[in-house]
Length: 112
Image (tube, rainbow, N blue to C red; front, side, top):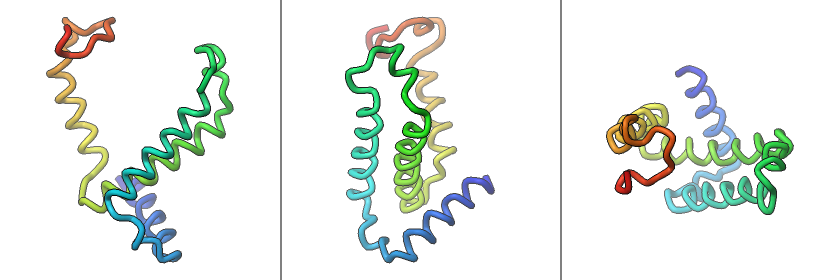
């Protein structure tokens, strides 16, 4: 957890040093996450699965870092621990997608 707290503290310092908190309302952070996710998707656009596996890792890292940074800031804004909310979601998904029904399938939970 210290690693996460250090990253959050770095993000907040970076933001505050530039007086950007005024722009970091929930809507703008959510939109930024979406835009950065689109930039990640663009790296794979029109590529075959084989070509997609060969996209330059540095470009993937850069876009993922942007997505995670805005996601962490949005979580922090609302007092959410990203690790807790992901763990909760895994548990809920486990209930929606039991292994005996979902293993090896890509169907949505209501189609299993």
